[in-house]
Length: 177
Image (cartoon, rainbow, N blue to C red; front, side):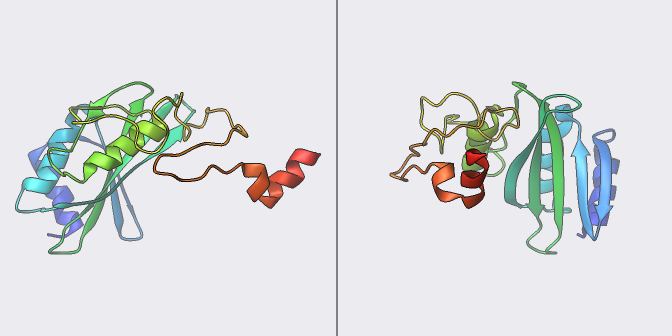
């Protein structure tokens, strides 16, 4: 099933779930109401048509205005028709959203990454803990209001810390003035 037909079927089966539909350069993005997110994702994955069985990516974008919130983006793929659809939902700071690990096992690390870097908490996740930052790290570094520091970060798994002004030329020039 192509994306246009999938959106039409979704509108018929789950009325009022879509806040906004954007079609741009052949790509469809649907903003979904938070309370209907799990229902919409379940329908898109499990219904024979549309059949978006693959979660290609799960990421986020942090915003400060008009309110502090994170946009969560689900990139879904239909392996039969090669169609893709993007599902978005907004979560206010410290507002939990449902985990999709029961739909896609691969969402486990994606959700942990969003928790670690953006502070998005996924209700029902089997192991909600940091994945990149040290366990005792305070804050969420990809939030736009997170303070920039020159503190070297010792990441997990033996990744050596780097200090930005020592490896990025324009940071050196900026810090001298």
